[in-house]
Image (cartoon, rainbow, N blue to C red; front, side, top):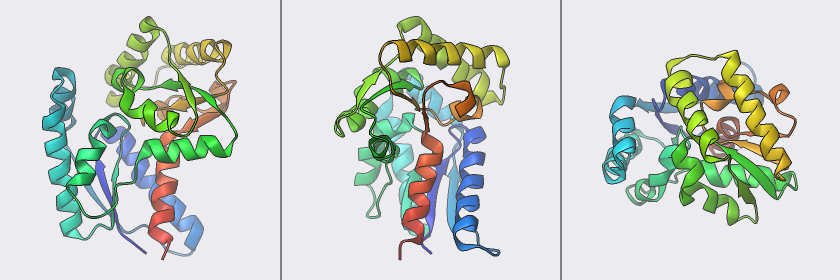
Length: 230
């Protein structure tokens, strides 16, 4: 079994679920007392969020690249950035290491394509929804992307940072996001990408009238496939 290097803490709420799902999937595949071989470096999210807010992506890239190098030196065979947003600096991180970085956008695109879906609604932080670094990975796989209107983008971003990252799962917010999903369906979306690893803590398949793509689960599955592919 290969060792998975996790860069977590963005936020730790979703990183807990990454760790749990990683071990759960390995246990289900191998049985017995098997669990995942993994290393986790958990950041202080306040530092990273400050860089995000200030647009200091070079600083974020430097921090995550240093962490990835540390994980490689410690014995990791791959790196997993346990958040969608910070894949904005994925290419910089990959350039800093010799082991593969498993990109969440690529894994999600492949999962969508397997369902023969070609148009999806994307929910995530404002950076993930509005910038090209994530959508381009889907577009490269002939998947078109619809995002909510500006007011809804502001609201879902608020829900992520002010509620979900703080461990708050509110029914009112769940209803708001479900309404956004309905609106994206009306605009032609055939599926919904939960493009923030906190959103699956709030939204499940029963909260959506479209197929949802839980990027955290998809990413973990990719990591487990890598780890067990000898």
